Length: 138
Image (cartoon, rainbow, N blue to C red; front, top):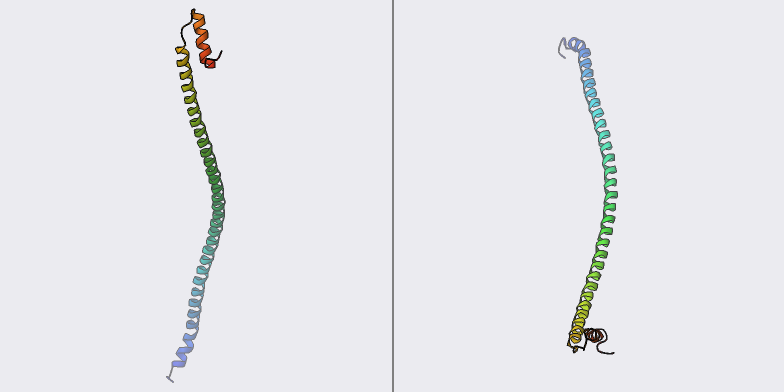
C-alpha cells in the first residue's frame, strides 16, 4: 500500500460519493423528463389514433352512402334508358303508321279527285266526299 493513500481516499470518499449521487440524480431526472415527454407523445398519438379511427368510420359510412346513391342513380339511368328506348320505338311505330295513313289519305284523295264532275257543284262535292270517305261505296 502507498503511504498516505488511506488518508487521501478517506478525504475524497465523501465528495466522490456525493458527486456520483448528483450525477446519478441528474441522469435519473433527465430520464424522468424523457419519460414524461414520451408519455405525452404517447397520449397525443392515442388521441390522434382515436380521431383518425372516428374519421375512418365516418369515411366508411359516407362511402357506403355514396355507393348506395350511385347504385340508385345507375338504376334510375337504366330505367330511363329503357323508357326512352320504348318511347323511341313507339315513336318510330307511330311515324310508320302516320306515313301509312298519310299515303292512304293521298290515295283516297287522288281517287276522289278522279271522280267525274257532277252536274252541280254540290253533286261533285258529294260524289268526291263519298269516294274519299267510303272508297266509292254509296
